[in-house]
Length: 73
Image 1 (cartoon, rainbow, N blue to C red):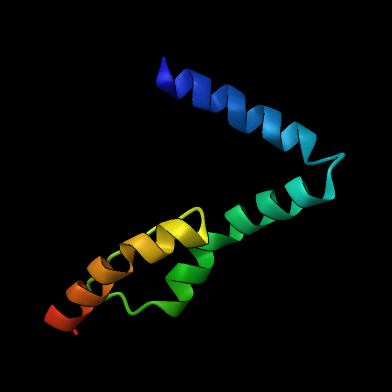
Image 2 (image 1 turned 180 degrees about the vertical axis):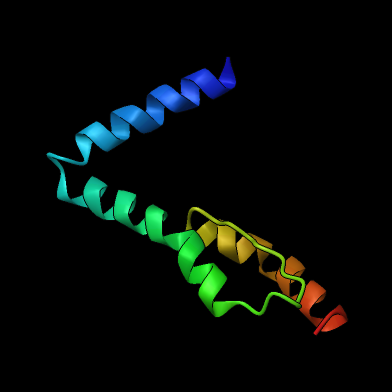
C-alpha cells in the first residue's frame, strides 16, 4: 500500500512540475542526483549519507556526523 501511495505522489508531483517552476527544478535535480554521485564518489570507498530536510535537523545531526567522521576519517 505504501509503494502505491508513493507512486501516486511521485506521479502527481511530476504532473505538477509541468506547471510549477520550483517543482520542475526538484524533479530535474532528483533525476540527476544518482548520476552526479556515481561520477563524483570513489567506488572503492564506503559512504554514509545523511539527509536533513531543514537546517534545524542538520544541526541536530551534526554531532553524530562529526563523531562518525572522527572515528572513520
